[in-house]
Image (cartoon, rainbow, N blue to C red; front, side, top):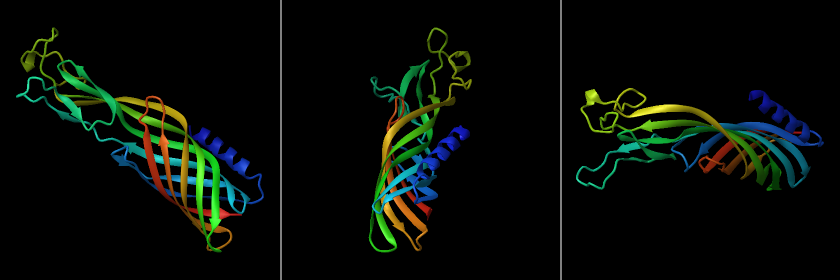
Length: 241
């Protein structure tokens, strides 16, 4: 996988290098999202060509970090309400089903995402050392999801589904008990192409070096994948040539 990323990265640099003038740089990104409970920071690499004084052809390699959910919380049935059923609350992206005297949640615990993009950056000079810009790109991304199951506590049952004392129960969870049990199901990969945009400013203390700050946002959308809005505030150092 690392080799594929490097090949893609090198190819995009070669494309951008056909122009006489361009830029290259990178930095860190502080990530946030209302779609997940937790986010980790990532990084990005920016490079491209100056088409004219107002427009750049830009490519990016971006690591969007890891996004994760808290595990669902088990809510037992209300014993005073005969119509009440046990459930999982605060679920992320998944489904709940009944399972041998209890319930089971199957879903995604976390996603780890990277991508490559290409697009245009419209910029405007405020003065000799400051530019503002807006960027619009298509992001080809890949995400690895961690899949898991969470079994609730179970009523002790025998092979026929009848309630028995715990010592005679045969409906243990994969953990070998009747208590709550998390189980990893491994990982899956997802790919898609989505619109990614951003805006910010570029500070140029000299003609060849620049400090770039950008707010960006992308909505990841794929089959059997949590539709996710990811935001990032990045700071980069760029060399202009």
